[in-house]
Length: 151
Image (cartoon, rainbow, N blue to C red; front, side):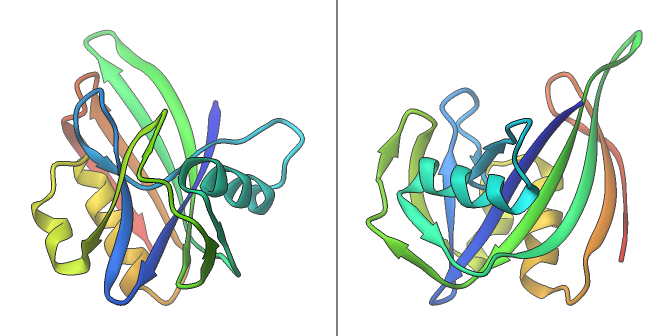
């Protein structure tokens, strides 16, 4: 199972998102954990690598599992550790190997092209007070089949 860590960074009512070139969908900056890293070390490193920003005091907001299914059953599974912060320092990159970085207003997120589960994860990270635990099932082409989120 692959483990990933990402972070919702909110500043002045906006969220920094990454537009991935494969689908042109917007995503939460972050990435794969290294085998020897803690979850917090991974989110700090991945966020800086993808954005040029060193986030400060990331707070865990959700732990989610994802299952990609085809007609024969599951094909991939991964676990996401989602964080939130409103503090960071550094010079933000505009374009990276991972895609294009851009600030979006919180209100705009519901209209951006992205995986449907990501909308729920972002909403909880911004509005929720507790750590959420969830599970998402998708088709191979990222159509959301089902989800559950427990707070």
